Image 1: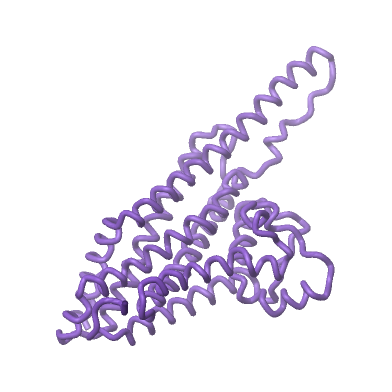
Image 2: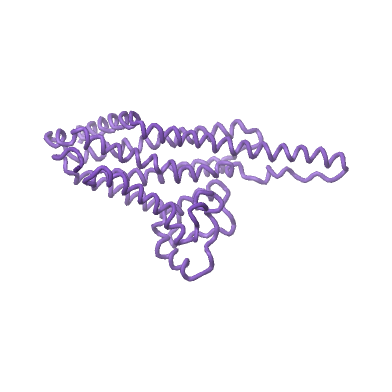
Length: 314
């Protein structure tokens, strides 16, 4: 058992090292972190603009002898400044997770490592655990950097301060984001292990991502693709019709992107009072079930991968 764990750890370390040598992975990771910085800047810029307008209006009202209303910034939750982060995780974060998960398996199949491993007396469970550990570690590193940038944003914004409850919701959002990216990473590793061609191995998880992000929300809540990438519009209540009610019951339990958007809005304090979740399963539980099932599928795919063969079929 100890030997198996050491093999898993070694596989995880070497796999994580290789992932960041891939240009596509590095590019998407940099883009994701850059968008986190942009999200922080947009939050600061919007706050600074509103505050500047308020200060100018205050001077005018003083001169005119009118009463001065309270600063509207004080009515805004500090966490809502990060609302664009939920969309960046849905789009770039999920895609980065797919590419990372796919690369972890693809590199071994294309480099001829699999037949070499198949000729050695080792348990495939050690290989699968090592790959899952590498995936979880790499994605955790990305989310840790994203969270650190967001923490610095709050520390540099004197207008806003988070209390203990606010920091708990902040942490919950990034844990949910990590879980959402982990879900797509699991789907990608399973696809890369099962697929007979490299193209199918990558197209399949991307198709799942497109379906969950754009197609299912349009069926359950009448959310058009352009509205799906807006953190507020994506939470609009569905039309009051039997079709969308039935779609919510039938498709809602597998509409993982909607579950994540609802959770994000709740954690970051921008959930509209009119927002309704289409599924009968609570969004947190729905996301958790999806992650566990995707992890089980990923593990099974790697355990049953044919290690006697190398590259994908032509």
